[in-house]
Image (cartoon, helix red, strand yellow):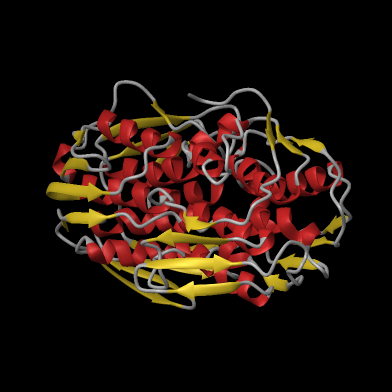
Length: 430
């Protein structure tokens, strides 16, 4: 059952050495669902994440004419093919799922007729203008009055060609185009203007497109997606979510535990896996094996601070920020300006909640600095952001005194998070 009341997080007083089975990756699940929808034939997806974000993607694809059904536990069967696509008689509701709205905006260019996408109140503030402008430059007619949802795409075909897009806002704009570009009328070349944030997510997209039979060339300056007759249906296994794994890894590192995430290893598609490299620099021990990754911590209050560019792993900024006050020296995270346009302004939210906890923190447009200190008891406001809730729960489990105001928001990407965290305690904590 969803937890809707504020949830106190008690301090975990005994050392833990055990597995934490993280669910399938949200980023990979939503990419795999879309690729399978465009692949001719039947695809079987394994270890699929079931969460608010992935359910929005699945429901919307169903509205566009793609039959999707459940198989065995964790298994989803997709009857795909571009020829199945048809306009939905009602708007596609994407909630506050960034991958869903951006990926489906691109997919809608292939749907004959008009497709309208709408979201919740938070989604109406999330920028989409760079993607919309990029599609318009390719000849797509799009109604989008505010540069954010709602929007209507008048689709049927996507011209290839050459476009340039800013890289400093969201990697999802590039992934959206690359996911559907094989079905364009010609090759698509995308030039990155400036630096590209979260580049590993676009590299993930390119690798998955290749897995389904597409062809994408990558370079420092951009991407070239080659036209193909169709993607190939296939079986596809979704690896555990590296962003979600950041919470047990951080808990182990800062709390003096050893936590093992099975089936997540150094060959991961996900850039956020490299958080373990940062934790290692801070003094944690990382075991990188073929079938698991484990992190062990030196003990509470023994991690060193770090100064590092988190531009490629920005979804883990709050994870590190939450444990930063427990480090022996300051933590300085740079290259993170794009987190201001996520589910909430994550930079402002993090600073506000650390201040509420009595921590010394400062920030600029793209950096965050946290000083060592002793957090005081407080209720952390989550701003309906799943990563705020999960990140600060780690601080609570290590230090105590943290109450999570809106625990139900973790359903966005990790519905079972509170059960998994609670299982670490000798007696049920809630």
